[in-house]
Length: 401
Image (cartoon, rainbow, N blue to C red; front, side):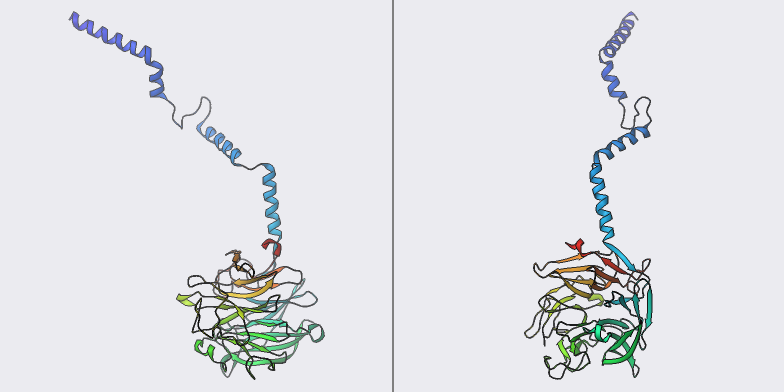
């Protein structure tokens, strides 16, 4: 019994001595605060809030940098302005010498936009599929004759056709309708539609293949062609094919026409569609040139046929539309691509801008004020309609420098 008592006393003394010498370390080990443990007198939420404020202060730019970023944003926003809203599939943009903007709307009306809007209905327009009121061009001598040319889809003997008509503008009305060229192939799809006067004073007309791909190679079929005629509809003596308005052929659905500073004609063209979409093109047009459709496409080549300068490839679709030249660059709109494309003629580099910001883009033009003008095409049944669609948007070209 005495022996057991001595052993118990010895254990108690040993434990007391162990605790006396190692108490601080034991407290640190068993009672060390966790990451969620509050400091004395401070709640956990207050501690986290202080830490967030410290982190924000460390990550935040200096006040001067914030002001600079805000100024840059304000400047960028001021360079892009919506100048017309609630339009119906705008297709082309032009300006009168007075500065008044003209806009064709595919369902069949012409808008005159200044401080307000005037709508002029165009008789005989058949808005079917991609057809309707499309291209527009002012006569080079407009100041003297007030002639306006329109490309539109109509009906003849129950079938769809395309034609170019000429009007005189007088006091916001259209007078003296004259058919310039008639019976161009028309269909629900592939109607082309762009018209423009070249530096030579001739009228150039982009006509789609109207769904008859194989006939794009036939010179006596005016679909799948770029045509060149005199202002009155007659055929120029220096056309590449005798007594024919055909200037180039083998096109699928050309949608844009523009001349560079060297007087060279460029054209945008839609490639194949459907499940095998892609192979959209930017072409440098030569008189009498065969651009290969439907025999070649994309980067393919064949003797006697001209391949595109650039093309989108098999897996990318631009669906290119309007086109214009500016400072050694070609700008063109993308419908399915939902972008404004910029092709540098010197570096051969292609860039895109505003991807999906505005939706489908169709018309592009350089205004008399030196700004770019774009039209959306989100009401055409293939886009996502946004508030205010469709629109005309003005852009300061300085943002592309």
